[in-house]
Image (cartoon, rainbow, N blue to C red; front, side, top):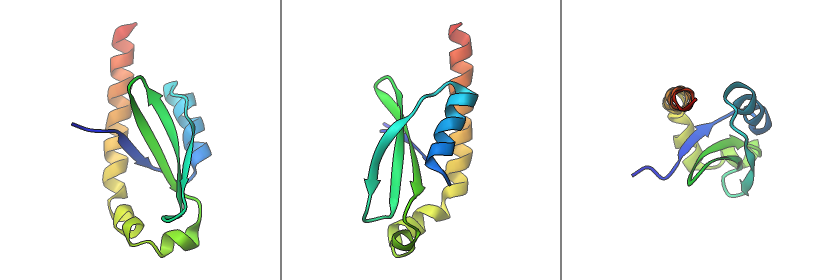
Length: 96
């Protein structure tokens, strides 16, 4: 079972704006992860959601081992995220 999809983004507000403009998906501010130097926005999808996550404190993020490992897989996240959004758009168009 997948809890939720995470999309690593460079700019949280820009990513939120793009998801709304390109896919009709609104997002809301999430929380700040001070320990990792990141923050997030949440895209509610009924009982599920997409989490947008981005670095907001570069110095803290650079000291975080977890973030270093996380950024090594960012290209995989990007590919998965694009597939998820394409699937979402396809399913939404079938409901019309």
